View (tube, rainbow, N blue to C red):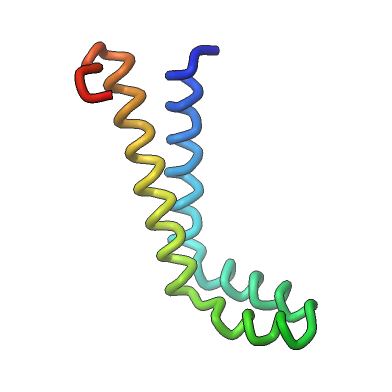
Length: 84
């Protein structure tokens, strides 16, 4: 499999993961907080910071990175390689 196809697949997976993080941000943040509480005092203080807003921000970053990967892969596949 060529590097460009791998980049395209990674971009699609990253984009999809970001969308899922944004859509299911409350249950995911709750799950992360519950798992972090298992680490004792250090986990409890970190679990307080696990909010849906931070989960959505992580999802937005994943969507952005996935989009850029897909755009670069499509540019390479179509021959628009002057900027890649």
